[in-house]
Every structure is written in structure tokens, then in C-alpha cells.
Image (cartoon, rainbow, N blue to C red):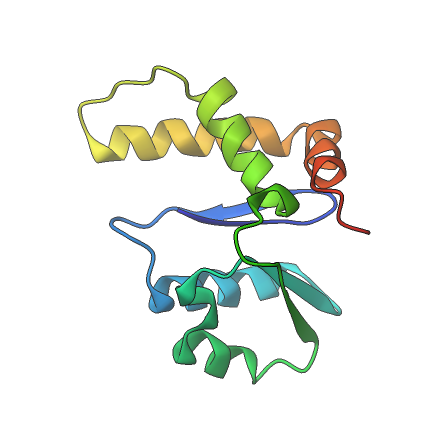
Length: 131
């Protein structure tokens, strides 16, 4: 799964397997269609975020600026708090038989998170990033 957070909502996309450069590019392409104007991407230092393919894709977008979080600082990443909410409050003890069922449950759970603007605001507040 790959995701992003704005001041108002959460965006996500579920892919089978581990996330590679191609999936990040697909996610960003879709994301930029929804976000008008300037965009600041705040990345952790996951190697796929710094890959040639992702960086090459981003060079085409003058409206996008990148900022990288310090290494080993998940507490500064507001999206980490969304993932924590998903795992500990929305999907605890979920046991499914098929990957498709897990995907469906996850989409519903992230939809519930999206409908809670106060929760999204708290993820930003907890990260202590200047907004």
C-alpha cells in the first residue's frame, strides 16, 4: 500500500506485493490529478522515494517540491500516524482468507479515516511539522 496525507484528506492505493518505483510513480500520477496548484512532497528516506525512476518522473512537474525527513524519524511523518490508526484501531485482529478481502477491509477502514477531519488534523499535529 502507498499513501499520502494532505491537510484535509488521505490518499492511498493498494498494490499486490511490495511497493516498487513503478507503483510510486502510478500513485503520484493519480495523486497529481487530484491536487491542483503547488505540491510539497514530504518523504521519508525510503530508497524507492529516492530512486531514479521516481526522481525522473518528478522532474517533469515544476509545481512539485520535495522535502526529505531526517533518517530514522518516523515520528515526524504524519502518514505514519494514519498507518498506526489503521493498524491499531481500524483493522485490529482482522483475519481474512483472501487478499481481495483484506484489500476491501482496508479500503473501508481508510474511508472511515478520510471522513474524520479531526483525526487527519491530529496526525499533522502529532508529527510537529510546521504547516
